[in-house]
Image 1: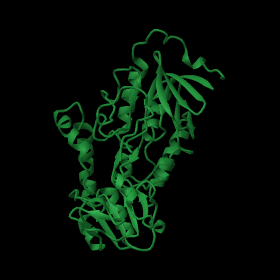
Image 2 (image 1 turned 45 degrees about the vertical axis):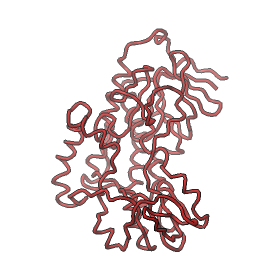
Image 3 (image 1 turned 90 degrees about the vertical axis):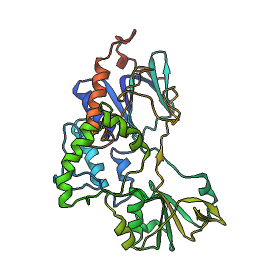
Image 4 (image 1 turned 90 degrees about the horizontal axis):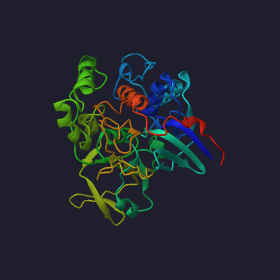
Length: 370
């Protein structure tokens, strides 16, 4: 089946919905495609105890504040329900259960395909976020098959783990929080270099004092338009974030043993730098993510697989946009409370850019059955 629409948004998380809000305000023909069965499922499928690091006052989307007490820190299910309510509130045209397989071009139009469907559009907004494919090293396949392996995207709670020890690989925020949780029921090791920690404890009185100026700096000063933002951006993209909710002292008090990087496998067991092996029944991978844009059949990526853009706008080919990436424009670009600014800017570009030959044809009238 072949269809046509002016603009396609691929991804129905906070970035795609924010873009949809601004497109709807301009009465612009568009559709949002999302691989999940329900809006918000990308959050529902994360571990049960996950909570945001930003209070609700900074977690709203355009036109709709987050429905919680200003200094509450929402859990992942609250975020999922908020996104679902947001799509319903503004009657956004989300098609769920659509896993896009290819994005290509046919002349000056984009072609989005999945299964036997073909959707033609003048503009495409890629809003698939930052967390694509978990970085799991090749040596993981050499671990003893009796060791239960879970990625951070699969972990929900300690009941999934086998009896015996747990090695959490990756010592950033996800690794620290999961290790702290499983340490209540399992002997736990946390593997990876220390990332440091923020000086103010999340949800403390000092947090309430310092978060507003920090948010101002992060959203207004740390952007690609400022010298300090341009200087910090490359380092911020490649450096692990400091620990926020679980502190080093709490990790130690929970009986978690800090160990070096896991670099391989010896006799089926995970091996650390220095040669030590850890005899465990479980391994949880919290090793970060890498971009996965293999489905985009267009030459728009750099050597690291990142899209080349100017504030989310791809110059060649025109009509392609990215949103929801970390530090796309500013430090807060991937956050609930920061993505709305980028969405407004991108939609402004979509709806005002110079029309190309053939663009005056109303593409929304191209709908046909193959």
